[in-house]
Image (cartoon, rainbow, N blue to C red; front, side, top):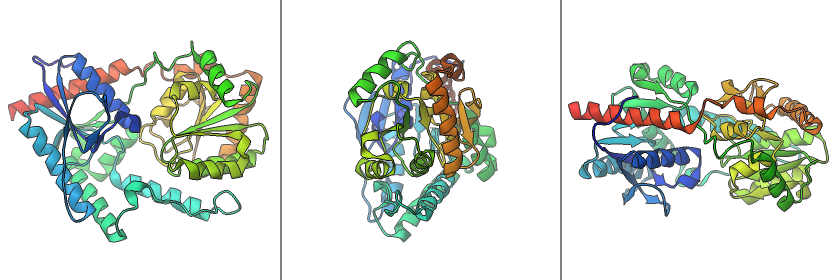
Length: 406
């Protein structure tokens, strides 16, 4: 592993420095803490930050008449602020004009937009009870008219091309082969600068030894007996990650004793209502947030029928606690899942019948006690956080050295 000859000043450039927002932000926060423990100075540049987030936070404020203008101004302001602070190396997750290490956790921006549109169209096509409400836009996409949104997305694509094809990024860390493949397809010139660094999972926190205790405690609080099947769905972007398809599949499955644990879908009230209409209020347990290790330990299966997920940390976490996963080919971690051993991978997103069949298979195995928890966990045994942190630190050091050489 490449090691630094001196402590570095590492600047993280991001919209919001809020680890609680999701997998990517949590992973970055873990990396920041690791770098600090290794003796490096970490600076976080963003619009705002959560109390207690690692590193030294520097607020970056920008203005502009349109969303596109504000986004371009932020991209420039983040880079300028890091340079003014004397950063040895910059790491960016958002679209910027230049950055030393680009970490496009969400993959190619255009591919993400395509997946969201496909998910929305599928929801709009469904009729007959559980999807009669029109899809709601996310807060980040509801402001401005369509032309402004197109302009903003056009800017992100422009900046992405500049980073990948124009040489604006020295190195590009890809969380999965899915990301590497689509960036290579869209920007062939970036291939020599791509590095595959799959995400790690905290195997100490997500373990088998505490599974039974965590499951019993959560089920007792929720009023679910240990004999009742429990399906978990943990994601913020409900449509993109396939919650409408899951609700359809539960209706098709038809069992009257299956409970559903929802954590994170936004807006929560809307998705809770839909779930209650689908299977009954007494079987729906919805939370803004929940301890993932506890929720996944209590669940018999994690349903993640996503239209797109470039990595899927929740899949790694479920496997780590011995919970099988049902996902689709559109998940970056899908190749990790062994069919009929640690889960099922559906060929197509939006296929409620295939999902219902997979649920029937895994819930039947759970009822009979036939799930081999050790075999499920084996799929992530080599995906501990340590190697991921070391690989990312090595890239940071490499980029700092390249920058110093000019």
